[in-house]
Image (cartoon, rainbow, N blue to C red):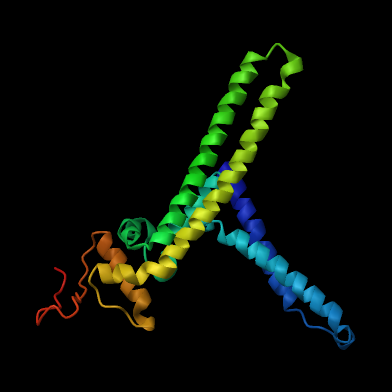
Length: 231
């Protein structure tokens, strides 16, 4: 049921984005064109609305991979989109690309993960407090505000956890933007041309998934046998 709710949210956002795009493509009559300033304002507002909706969709996984909760969807979006944009499978390539991170990016990633863990722990803690206090003051109606307050704080902590998860997922995208070629060099493969990038990363993903792949090694200037083939 929760997955279906998330799917309806995804569908609504997708339809809203399509409507904004369609509205932006509507033809203007000559009478409308005389109101240039108003048209510019309307176009700018429509563009902002469309961008907001597209950002919401980008923070969610595809419809066939939706999770029951907003937190799960925020994390899943990072897990299955960061490397896939370049042909890399994120889950299998992440342990190999992580050691290639620059120190500033590694620190930012650790800080984002700490913020996520803290928010999740706070949410669970206040949920437990709300349940405990609910039982404790069950017969004291004048104190029902205590579990209600704990539940409200748990809700705020959960919202913070979703925001932290989105920031963490965004940093995972940055890792692949900046360090995917460092992964290629670390595996001793030849750097691809732009038109060959997708194919190379797909073959690397197959290799990391233990499928049989033959890729030429490139060991730089180590000697005449610098290029071998995977067996």
